[in-house]
Length: 634
View 1 (cartoon, rainbow, N blue to C red):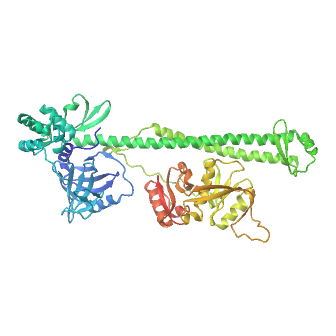
View 2: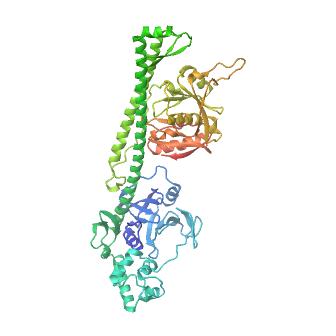
View 3: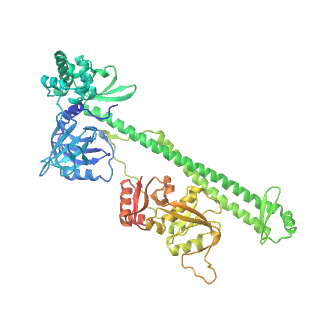
């Protein structure tokens, strides 16, 4: 399959591009790593879009591929120098794969050079031939492409459009290879057109070029002129795309014997044919990349759904178990009383074995109170079950949406001639809604439906523990000082390892570890009942600190936070381990690169570029202490 234009193709393209002489440059866009698009306008002819891809192609396009909202430095430089300039000439250098656009500006004459050979470049030069800016700075053995250097073209080869019979004979006489390689390389025809020349001349393409007889040289010379006649005169051009076995394999300006029996799609101009051929390939590649990303997202949602369904089964079992224990205490009240009376010990907690199940009784409380506690535990698991059921419904909706998107293949490039107006970017509605109690703290919801809350300072740490933490909640803190208290509202249920790691990452990332540039930190977990404000006798604990009694569970995690847009179009913060739940986000890591003001500005600009309206203050409230670096934008 064709990957780039040959010298013959470029010669035809350049002839057709002569219609652009006199056109004015309105804007320059960089729409790919190697590709720019010039928006042009010409009086009495309308607008044109010229695509240049370094190392591959140059042609007019009828397709609009969206450019980044924030232009690259290269695009900005070209805009500064080329906007308003008029094209005065378009030429191919010596039948090589190099095209120059000469532009007349207000006070200068500039040249935009497109090198379409392998390892190509796009270079802006001034009227003296000095490089103003290259797309890529490259050093070769014979030349150097960088700013302020004089632009030097690669060594030229013989021009087949102007070659004489004597020059061809001399070329073949000094050649060491076969005929097809000699004319393909030394005349710059490329393999396909060199084979066509051999076929027309009737010469075996594998024959040594230096062994050609005079009559064979004559035949070869006439075949070269015959093959290139459409390029020289414009007669016999019939631009088309070649189809083989249902696939587009080539795009040509005129018929070649190699594809004599192949299916062909004709076009009114070679620019149109090239545009359709290459843009179609780009769209297919982009669709494949999008499909791959959708498959990844679908797999993530399926994994989350599996974890949620496992949690749901556990909650249902626990809810039924505690409800059944409460009912047994009521229905077997007398039997349980007798069993307790028969025990000689005075243990506070007594485990009784009934035929139905084992029940733990707190002897300091009445049996009715014990039954009531069982019902309370059942109620806790019922609420958790209902929360996970809502989360499952939400995940299934998202999974269905992604599966529907994956099943629909839409064009990514839209024909400019038939382009519909660009849709207004989706903006978050600004509603003054009543805030939840936990929104005064830092918080996030895990994929298992567990609410995780973190203090912001000593005062909010105190409030969080004293007012909102239950004895069966999970308390998390780092080993380092200057860290927030983090509370997970678990209701006493066990959490998966992935959820524990996400909670620990959240706690570590908002600690002083981030400010000091650490890339990982150690956290510990205890139950709420192990946390106290009562210090040992004779000691004092300061505000925002607590006494931890009993065994701790330690966990070491990397630091990382994710600021992005959730399914409700809110800007929220999550630990990096939970980033797959966001539609668009940036991942942050500790680094001495950007302070909070610079970082918030860059994040706001990125979100605005994708139609998400937010403010610097909103982002600043979510940032960790100290300086950071944007690791990934998605």
